[in-house]
Amino acid sequence: MEISFAGKRALVTGAGKGIGRATALALARCGAKVTAVTRTQADLNSLLQECASITPVCVDLADWGATEVALQDVGPIDLLVNNAACANLQPFLEVTPEQFDQSFSVNVKAVLHVSQIAARGMKARGSGGSIVNVSSQASQCALRDHAVYCATKGALDMLTKVMALELGPHQIRVNSVNPTVVMTEMGRLGWSDPEKAKVMTSRIPLGRFAEVEDVVNSILFLLSDKSNMTNGVTLPVDGGFLAC
Ligand code: NDP
Image (tube, rainbow, N blue to C red; front, side):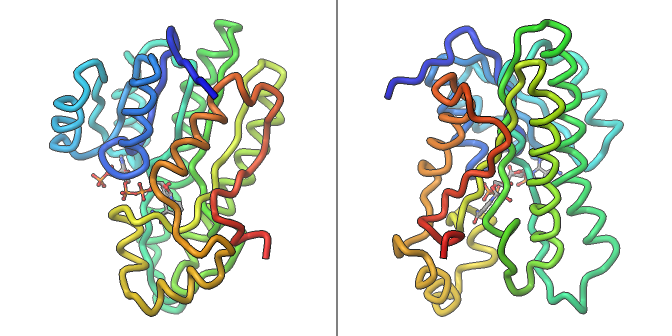
């Protein structure tokens, strides 16, 4: 299946590393004009070395005001990928208010904010658009030490559905991908222990973690007009984990 984003303008958050970086590069390869948002300048520098056409924006998305300023000049956006997130893992009884607030600020509040900025423009132009939120299997299944992370991704799934409901009449589709473990920097934090990893893979019918490309391909599909009638779904990219 050929997917082209020629003439489209895309914004990807958390584009410095992992899934977000691969998504930004894939979108650029498919012809989109890409704005990459992340908070570490060195990651943006190396991204630009890989793909000079990408526009970098360096901001901490946990900061609402700084995000407003940083994104004021990005111009029209047709495709948005809300990918940035943090995973502060700790036992439920040890969760602190600071960790809770940080996680919800990035994983939920910034998604709402960046989506408002992009969708206001899409609505005003009347040209529609597509938004993909990067959620997780953790939104629907309890994982040890993931109380706050699971809660943020559960909230994100519901945000996706309400956005789909309210933005649909403006031909703005909103969906999420919900991957299983991917061995990025974030994935390694929680799943480097081979014993733990074995327990998780044994619960995945396909018997393996997801590759970055598996997630990127699903994101591209949901952004593209190949999924024109798909709106408000939370698409597992989990080898069947959530089905069992
Ligand atoms: P990584 O940690 O590899 O990359 C996350 C990126 O987001 C980094 O570039 C990071 O920048 C950026 N980011 C984090 N916080 C902020 C912030 N406050 N402001 C701006 N940028 C920020 O994560 P993954 O690629 O693994 O994860 C991408 C998405 O996939 C996330 O939504 C995650 O929840 C989801 N996911 C991941 C899974 C996994 O196993 N890896 C499984 C299921 C879902 P910096 O490094 O500078 O902090």
